[in-house]
Image (cartoon, helix red, strand yellow):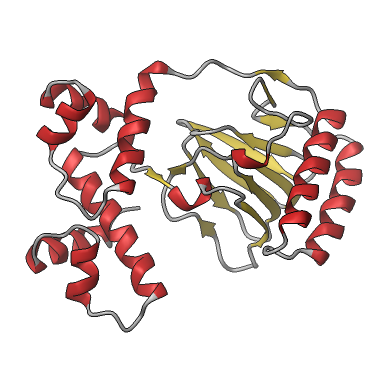
Length: 261
């Protein structure tokens, strides 16, 4: 079983996440939890090797290779010592008619080729100039990056949405948008037009845990983000804002969250 969660912030308009991950010798990096988002994600191998779990399969990213993670693919990174890679996450609001990714996609893993190093030169240059507050820079970066990707690597037809995952995805998005409210299995099942038993089974198969455990884990994630943003806010107030109805329910969920891997 696995636990995957929806990265709501990544899907905000005009969002782009561009950083260089370096895993130093003596420390093995693992991303906290499998996650997913509506944005697309590119990983560029610079040194070493990173194993990337995507929808239940492991892909090994080595130097010179590129990994493409499509919208709503569940994924998690496992970094070996000495690994370096660029990670670029691009929200759909950046796609225009020139580089539209609504109808095309890329292979999950693209093998090493000479063109990779031309692409790396561009990424290195932009990384040195990067200003996350500049919309003009971000827009230009996306235009050029996607153009280069289409120039250097094969494109493939984009798969039709998996209808089996469509309802769980909508349900999870709804959960994060209404995390402070009293969300029950019965009310959620009714909203999406299913019996509670069927809805619970469908969501559990997608998330890897029960409905209640998933709700509580999502609330803990939001609680940690809130406390990081506002460190002086009382624990009781922060937990209440994230949807916990009592201190006991919060502490039980918080204690359990410490063993989720």
